[in-house]
Image 1 (cartoon, one colour):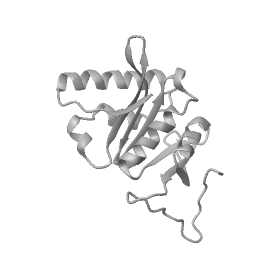
Image 2: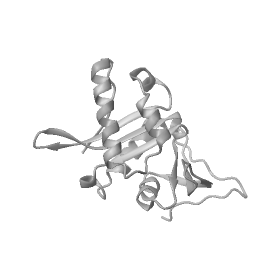
Image 3: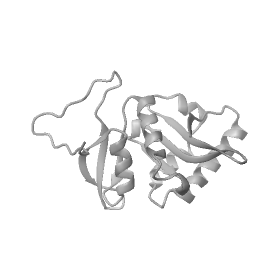
Image 4: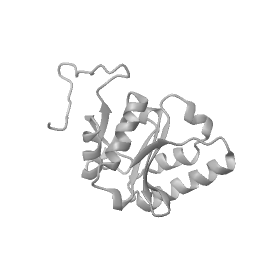
Length: 172
């Protein structure tokens, strides 16, 4: 599996590629990708990919007909605006999502995302990527949702919780 960043300055190629990624999210996002995240991605331009906190990564595998898409991850605003990960069913339970999210974290230095509590696969992916639950909120559909955040700064220092601060981490 290969993780790579997408960037196209050619508007025709960019629009075609972006359409394919949105279709991938619709087909394999299990209807768990937020409308806000999809809209952010749909409005994405190549120029925005140069902004801090914005990244679009894909996971591809070598197939009979060349490289095939196995997963997609899009982050905007270090995850505050959008944090989206979708993996093709054939490549689930092979750490594809974890690899994408880990690559996002390494690329951006910090990351946060919201995951519904009834989505154990996504929670596991986030915990395996090094994110920690820092808050419990109501999500866009009213479901209990965990706010997950990286506990490392861009310089690699670990952010420790302050006394009295609630922190739920994946048991090691």
